[in-house]
Amino acid sequence: MKIPYAYSWKSLWSRKLTTVLTASGLALVVYVFATVLMLSEGLHKTLVDTGSRDDVMIIRRGSETEVQSAIDRPQASIIATLPEIAVDASGQRMFSPEALLLMSLPKRQSAKLANVTLRGLSAMGLALRPQMKLVSGRMFRPGSSEIIAGHKIAQGFKGAGLGETLHFGLRDWTVVGVFDAGNTGFSSEIWGDADQLMQSFRRRSYSSVVFKLADVAAFEAVKTRLEQDPRLTLEVKREVAFYAAQSEQMANFLRILGIILSAVFSIGAIIGAVITMYGSFASRTREIGALRALGFRRRSILGAFILESLFLGLIGGVAGVIMASFMQFLTVSTMNWQTFSELAFSFTLTPKIMFQSLLFALAMGFLGGVLPAARAARLDIVEALRSI
Image 1 (spheres, rainbow, N blue to C red):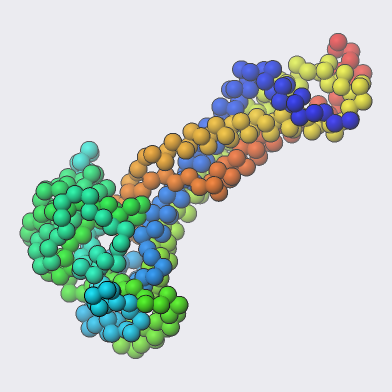
Image 2 (image 1 turned 60 degrees about the vertical axis):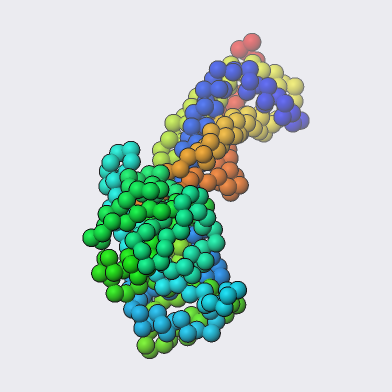
């Protein structure tokens, strides 16, 4: 005979206080577990969304980031002659040599200095970022000391707001616009005219070259031709793959940190579940004996207690995921280890993270209930009935 599921559920709620306390402990562990995974996913998604599969990113061979890269003007001119580069409606080639620079700015709240990314680009560079939209002000004028700031930089750093002035590169730069590039890394950058920024920082070479392919399938051919050209020392990547690699180191660190923290905290949660289930066993000795006398088998008793523990884990898991879901409304900033500049991003909850969190909760519930369940299943009928 099998014990019905309703029996395990009703037994769990017959001890409301201990059930709530244990489920709360499990929920907090799941909350930590899910939050760290959401943080890692948010960082990864922000950088991956920064790139486009149609666009090609070119940096110097051996460089891991644009900060380390240098492409001189003759090399950029050779790249510009590629027939695979797409053209826009006006017939202009969708090609943008760009300079990436770093500067320190004080934060608005703490006044602490943090590195901010400056990107020098052309009008075509703006066209290659269709996700960018001005939310206030206007676009910078080419050849001028005007810049536009990503909205996350404008909100978080002094001098980066609309109409404010920043002093760097031996001159003053006026913020004439604030833009929103969605959930991408571009929202954490300041943009200006490439030639003016390079002149101001005494840079003679670009950091990268970005262009759009007329045919996405031609990428491998373009990659082979450029990387084997003896005049060039370049590395060619799809833009989306380049930015995905930028998030790998930091995202992996966050995942490992989350697993370690969750493992430590889960020990306490499992102990709480064990205590709860042992308490359930102690208070139901006579009931277990009666069930055995009525013909219920040992494996049915074992299954009932494990199912009860899994219910407990599921309650904690659902509560933990619900609490973690509210973190999606927060935006955090941290230093991008690849570029050593500030990067703002949001927590991101995905179906995969929800599934992993619930599975983790069920695993804690199972581990917390397996020993009490085994003891209940081994209970002798006569011994149990004597306690009546």
